[in-house]
Length: 237
Length: 393
Image 1 (cartoon, rainbow over the protein chains, first blue to last red):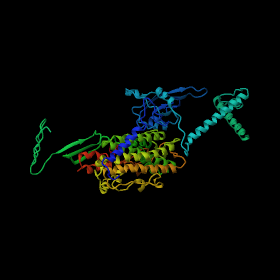
Image 2 (tube, helix red, strand yellow):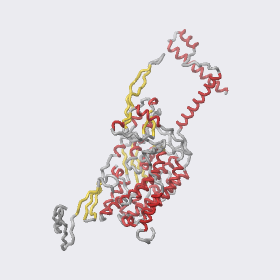
Image 3 (cartoon, each protein chain N blue to C red):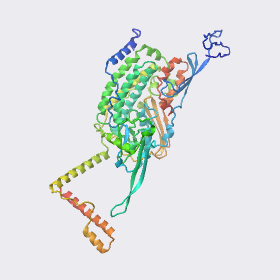
Image 4 (cartoon, each protein chain N blue to C red):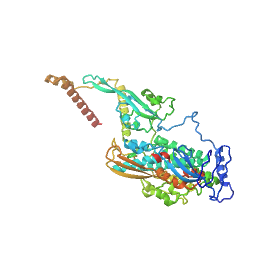
């Protein structure tokens, strides 16, 4: 350091800086009055998109703190012209934020995009039991989930996200084209539901094949034929 | 002193409440009694729950014994019941001031066992994040060391910068302290747009701020009187005790894992290791300031050289390290960190041993304290940089 010219000069130099800082504008965050602007990736609270949840339990299994509670039940869904199917119904989905360590593993492992991070953080409670957010509360947090930020230059977006975006774009374009065609063609309604090859069905039933098997075969034949037609059309273009 | 304690061959110290104490000096000179004193486990100077039991002869410390274990949470055992992704979230927490460097060590160990090649861009970003984490850590100690010596301003300054750095690290990682940004095979996700600009700006600000810290404290006569020549550590003693990091560099030994066993892309960068020679509290503090500058140099090199590309490898759903063992050393902010990972081929490690820098650094606290004055204790404890969570694990 500088030669000891005057006793206390070093101290005064430091104090001079303190004084200069005193005159510069304060950097204090005026928190309760001014809300902080948090980046979209902030791990504030976990939101649940209940509609996307298939009760696969991956989040509950992967959670290092075991703070996700899931109850589910099986529901039978009758299917017309087929076996009845069973479906998992989400009865309870709760996250205990008193235990959660905000690592984000549940959000990362969710294969169906049912869990999201939201930067909201003001949910302190006087009673610790209130920190267990049930699915209704977790669903409400969904409204605060921001879209993911764009990536830095030179970044390669993950393949599954690119594929998802491409698929969504294609679907949207098709829907637009369809709507346009429908508007131009005078609104000719398209047949809905699975169609079958009536000719084949009639022949198979006449031959003595059981009706269900005949219907399945006829349906497969129709789908095959439709695909061939589509392929030929695609080849023309 | 309420009672008169007899002392063999010495003086009798009379004195009770309301009584003036008179000391009689006989032929052998003043004989005093040793006094046993507990510092901690709750003490403002100990950065957490460290307890130091000292024996005092007057004001001179005769014996000092650090008592550790108040924060033992069994990380090594916990890791045996967690898969590798969960371990990364776990090791964020033993040394909470160097979260990114810790998780990097675990990821490197698993990647070495699996013989994985991590994408180039991920390695560069890992270096960038480690260096910012190093600066965050050093800022904490710069601020608190001033505070412990009675200067309250440095901590305001350093926390102002910490806040800014944490804010832009949060935009990339989502966390301010526990980043959980590394994954085995790369990173969680790429940097968000605007991160590099914020990083460049912060690096420039940080450079000028670092000069302010120097101006604020180093010239201060009180600061110099309290730290120069206090707690001097000899290089051979430091090496014997396994002391690493800034505490070692202050003694003149330039051992740094980033140079001696480079990981990530440190071999492509120009790593400077600031070294001082006296090994006292003052030098340990100056080394911290110099290390911030050295880290800023590295950060600027990363800004220049960051390649484009993916940051992640395609990984199986459950990461399983093949059977075997490996030891990975990393240069953590406080010194050398190491993970010895033994895997039996399952999705959790069979054993994970941690070598934490704070644990080795705290071993030589008795060496430094014995023979020094009680009033220097804080200057010594505050400059042997350790985090108690990292000591006890």
